Length: 214
Image (cartoon, rainbow, N blue to C red; front, side, top):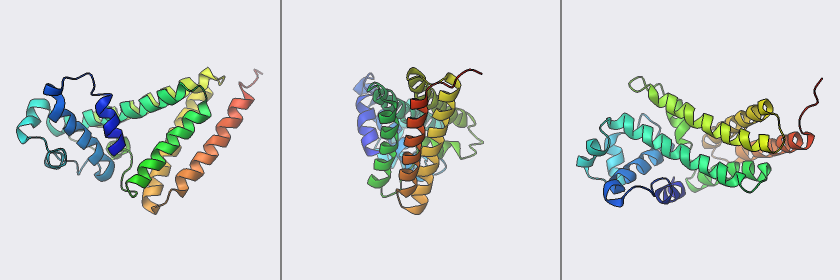
């Protein structure tokens, strides 16, 4: 999450004072990066401290809830970053451009990381997290936010709310599934195939417009 982190540091964390947040922000950003590569189970406090260079004494000062709070905040940060990209792309006014950009983001992340990095939200969602069940709820809330942002864009461009919501969920599911396949195959082919099919499907849906009432 190298480029994500750079943008997130100047965006999501921009309103927090540097004196209070420097080590805190580094830890949250590191946790998000580690989630992408290693999953939730392997994202320990010790690993985050080594990765971020933050002092050990800052852990429970900034995160009294311990590891679960740190991971939860990393999920929120990563979710906010992607939601911001969707909303920024939506401002261009073309849903196809926005969705193509969404796929392009994951394509770049996969290639830049040598297929090591996936989605930190998925990393949390697929693990049981019996000791912190709220983490799954946080991951679900992030997916819901992404779906709402995409659905709102599609509805603004003429699709009925129900169709827009279904297509938004399908787009997110296609991206996330393709990213997993790409990491396993060490190839961008699954993502490129999904992107092409989604582009054609969405283009047809937008041209067709609302279905006529019976």
